[in-house]
Structure formats: C-alpha cells, structure tokens
Image (cartoon, rainbow, N blue to C red; front, side, top):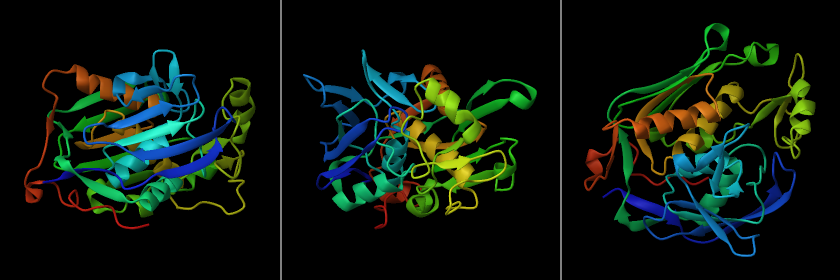
Length: 307
C-alpha cells in the first residue's frame, strides 16, 4: 500500500512575512490520517483552522492566500511545495500571524524542517487526485498570452516556461521540466528563491506588499543584473522558482496529483483558476489509492531521501 505520511515530531521556526514584514512563529505538528494540511491561526483569541482547498484560495496577488471566513493565512505556496515534494499528506501548521515566514525565500528551509522532524508512514492509503481528461486555462493575447494545462499522466510531471524580456533573466535557462517521481525535489527544485525587480519594489511596498523582502530572502534584479553578491543557486533559478510555486499552488487541491502540468508565464492566479476549472468539469478527475506499490508510478512509494 502507498501510505499517507505525516511527521514523527514537532518542528519550529521563526521568521518574517515576505509581504507583511511581521515576525511570525511557525510550528509544524503531526496530524492523523485523512486530516490534510491544516493551517491554524493560534494568535487569535480562539484558534481558527483553515483547511487546504483550492476553493479556499481567496487572494493570489504575489502569493497564494487561504481563508476561512475573514481569517487568512498568506504566502502558503513555499511550505505547500515542500509538503508536496516530500509527500506529506497530513500536517498541522500553527502560525502566530497572518503570513507564513519567508525564511530564505525558497522551499529548502521547509524541507529541512520537515525532514528534521522525521517522516512517518500512517496506516491509511494515500489518496491521489488523478486527472482523467485535459483541462486548460488561458489569459491574454500576443505578448501578454499565458496559459496552464493539466493532462492525464501516470505520475506527476511538470513543465514551465518563463518570458520576462529582461537581460538578467533572458541570460538564464527559460524552461524546466521535472518529474516528481525522480525523488530529486530537495536537490533540484527546493532551493530556488523568489525574485523581484528593483524597479517594482517601491510600488509593491506602497501597496502593502514585499515589506519583509530583501537580499537575504529573495533574488533582487536591477535593470541589467542580479544584485545578490552570491549570484544564483541554479542556472535555471528564475524558472525553477516559478515551478516551485506551481507545485505549491497545485497542492492546494488537497491531494497529490497524478497529472502532467505544463505552463507558460503562469502564476498563482492562473494556477488556482486551473484547479477550479478541473474541479468544475464533470468526470475530469477522480480520487484513487494504490493497494499494490507496484501499480503506483515509479518513485512514489519511496520516502523522500534524507537532506
């Protein structure tokens, strides 16, 4: 049986929100089988739980925000990406503010926290969401065109292409393909950091965004070059971060996917629109389990390798 996974122990971190700039404490706790990923705002007079669901995503400006009524948790995509990459099904995420801490701007710190706590198999079958027919969403035309697509696949394979028309970005690899069954998420994807263009920072902050951003938790690019002294972590770091975000956005559907995802210039909004289109189309997907490990896609039965 391909079993569900949670943590063996607690993991904690303290940081700041990328957009809010507020200090936030994060605690990751084991959860029973079939719980899913549940965010808990423990800073409120009475803690409020927000269950991960594509239809609970209420804001996609520069990040993905989950909400239950008026209570929100912002910038969940990096942690969700790490959970997807390590196959974590059930987890309580306690936070003391409205935003998940940005830490180093990638998913690698979350991978470290999850693996440090240890991953435990549970006595319940992992529930996959299998895509049965292609679903695609598109926006814009010409130079403004962007799209995202899900298609049937016995596994979880992703392809992402960017096009920013910027010298520093254009000089790097613009497209990346990744197979989640390879077991190389922590090595090949997780370390890719979020990025921002210096010309946009002032307007973002005026809109109440990027208040906690800086060179220690983001790649910052001026008109011609990367300003971070250490440079890029990957030759494809820009597009790999967009793929990292997409993995996290897609995991907001509440289950690991069996699908082929491909996208051109997509972002949080279009990724969520794609999930909603999938769920809205009759018989476009189904929930399945694997009682026989050999029937599962290659690599999906293995625990994630140690950090």
